[in-house]
Image (tube, rainbow, N blue to C red):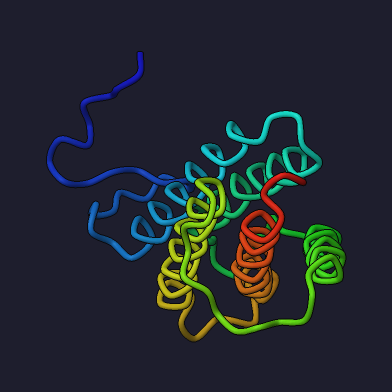
Length: 173
């Protein structure tokens, strides 16, 4: 069954069995991550046989892990982290490679040169919102989730550069 009927009163369960309000900052973070992942899915569907499709799919998988980390209520003395340094390095490597393909940074642009690029800009703004929600969620215990913060910060740059790449070279996607 797709629904449980348990969330009808404005509360929901998260990993660890906690019952939290649907307006809790944890769910705000999860919602923003889910929205960003959906936007990435739209872009991936638009670029099926391109070199970028696999990178976007991998980031979509990472988004599952980000959501898992945010959905888990930590047990006393135990920190649950899902994003690894290897995933962050892969993101940074792609970011550097794509930056090299572009000419020097010429300032911020107005989105909309291509439909996939515009969707990537939407995803980037949603990731920035998620980053703010995650910061509120882990206020005071940021060090325990430093990989999560680094990944989200780098992801917004990754999305920006990929959008720039698609908008400056639309026929090479």
